[in-house]
Image: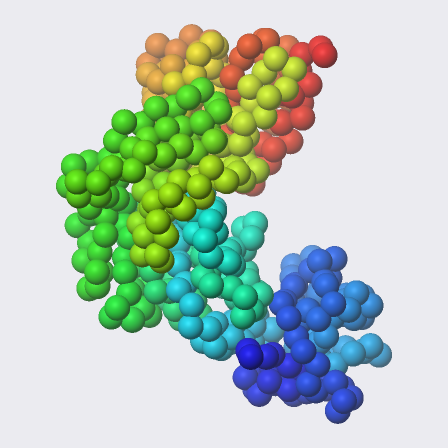
Length: 456
């Protein structure tokens, strides 16, 4: 049995156990950094943030049933045992890596500039048709979040699907040292965090740091439609997926059935698998191919894989369709970069009726930001966007690009309040409305406003 106790936590992290001797062997199951989510038996990790110090909530965590706390300062009048370490951020990573090492189950790591969360959801859903899967929840894809996720492993789990996100060199190596993936999926090399990583070759170099921490028997599942990934040698078995003919596993005959489903065929050698995902977005077909590869590697039959696809549910903020008051609203607010915005516009171009795009700034694009925003405007005009709303300093260039390419019905707002006040009067019954921008633009605030823009 894989057990974790305050005593083991102290030994693994090099920390000092503080508490009653009788509590040293309390069973610890799972870990949280937010006391509001603590369940009995959890480890509460006290993180000192910019605005909130987790140490202040340690006793509240104990009240909720925490078995132990991990702290980097003394907890006054502690109601339970805790382990005192020099840095909770560093200690939790050591602990996460240690605990993962106790499990001999297949672990799939997933990264990419575009689509990694959706890929994680599809792959976990497909594999979940047969196996009990632990997966990354919400956006816990950094070193802290991944470590917390791994601490929820238990002996009932038969596989894990872990999303791995980075913003600078060295991060993927540290993540992979914790996760030790057996299979590593890469969705696409794009312009995310280009400021820190320099160019697309830098993005590739940063994300492929993971391969140094995989066994020789590891397997790389790479998007072969991406030129950089197609030419990359991971020094281990490589399986490519995509639409192009050179891929090991190909997606063909893609059919977007409105907002309700996407149908496609996947070929592997002479065998063809016909499948359907009950969700919106043509980009899902490519990611589905990665799920087919993953499923087969883990022993699933094609019938089980097809069943898994039918259980897929979109994540909020990622091409999630909301039908409301005569409007089809596409919530794609979670984040944005040139690759993901183009994918969203391509999917919307297949839908009938008036297509409305509400777009905002894409962050972290460096010195080429203006040009990239301008090209998105051109792409929108050339891909069926009938009405364009833009808000943000850089979004002005999306507007300019749209107009330059012949788009006529366009509106630009420097301030969010201006957009909120104006958009309600310009949405019509029957419109399909895409809302997308980088996360810090807070475009999710527009969703209820647009949803209620027409009378009931």
